[in-house]
Length: 144
Image (cartoon, rainbow, N blue to C red; front, side, top):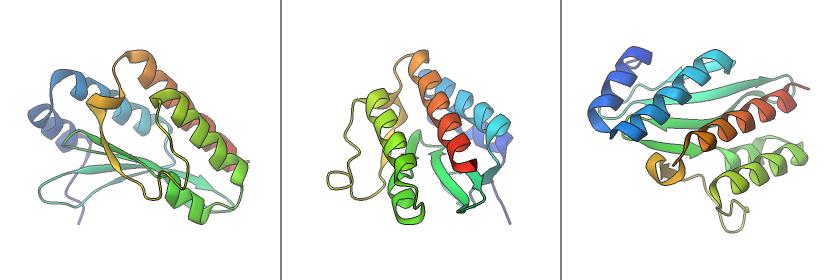
């Protein structure tokens, strides 16, 4: 049985996280609710998760990122590398993540999907907007 939903998730985030991180997470939850083909809420006892999934005819439901109630985000780029054969879509996702967060997501330097503190990645609203544009663009490409 699913423990988490939007209401519980946001309530817990407001308790666990600082104001800026809470605002970013609420923005991402609202964006995800509006645009994800499938929004999966976790079942954990201590920490809630929300996973954004895109439905692709070729690859089924593909998770693109998840966020947690303790203020972390994970980009599922390596999971996509294993599952999605259209390497140009993965390369596009990688380039956009690298440009937005000034981090290297190369498969050799980033061999597994890691959780990152939201407060370290999103400093201004524009970064949230760029990330949302990235997810919308990758979703559109996966559906082609």
